[in-house]
Image 1 (spheres, rainbow, N blue to C red):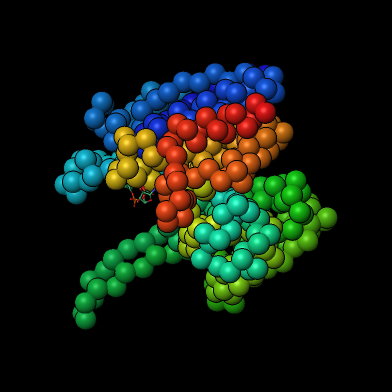
Image 2: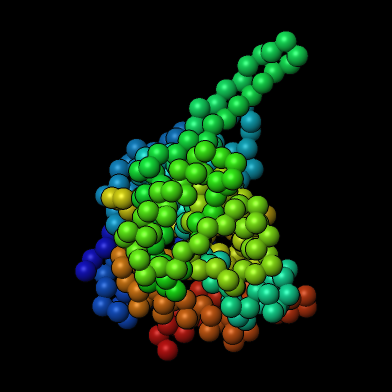
Length: 358
Ligand code: NAD
């Protein structure tokens, strides 16, 4: 099998961390008899500099034809001028929209070796392994909105809107993922108040009951979920929810492992390639210094293998290698305890490669 992987290193630390993830993919390909064809393209600030466009047509075209996309990060102070014609983030929003990436996946699985970096107590965080599915192209962020002048000031509104089809496809995707995990799905809504949530709940329940009868299914209101996520995170497996609830809950969840430098995410649609990236940004404060933690991007590469190329064993091999390196005590600066020795981006990447080969 030869898979086409489009690399979009982007800005800041993006190129540094994507280089390490690429090396890991090449090595895992050799070890498992897979070939990957890599091509690299501009997105974000560097694309504005070169073409005046954060998502040049050439980049989009190659991405459409790729089997999967691995992105670093975009943005930085150089492109922050509020009067500028365009911004790096526009490239990111546009690629998600153009490729119809309606599902955002975020695993929340703290490394056993870094449990004490979590803001939660060890006995609460231990055993946590959640996979969030956030709906990404509907709901409140895409519904009709407006601003009107009134006699007393102004009135603004946004509308949360969902169709049967939009709920069906993301719940189905979440259930398919759950079937390969612990077969447990939690749907989060606000059906006691919102009409859109009542539709969500009805459709979600029908999909689970008729298509995935083996799945253990429950429903939690979003306000309760915000509490459960920090009081009993280990109780959840796959969690599926609409756009805004997912936006807030996944950010809450991303704090649980205690470090930004370790968290990957994926945005998926059908048909077409998935886009994989670390959840952190371009970290301009450390760009070019060789100290960025490449592990989130390396773990994003593992997600790419699992979700876009159906290569579970190589994906798990990468995750095991990362865990082994952390277990052996190696730390980049962002995850090192005070006074603890730290290593750079390349050294961390090299250690993961060595573990994979071992
Ligand atoms: P950031 O995630 O880039 O950085 C926040 C802090 O975490 C910084 O101190 C940074 O040094 C540190 N950090 C982040 N990733 C790290 C890593 N891999 N290793 C070690 N330390 C790491 O967030 P920010 O500072 O708010 O944003 C910087 C730029 O990134 C902005 O232009 C923002 O718009 C952009 N951004 C892009 C994305 C994306 O491309 N998906 C996401 C978030 C922010």
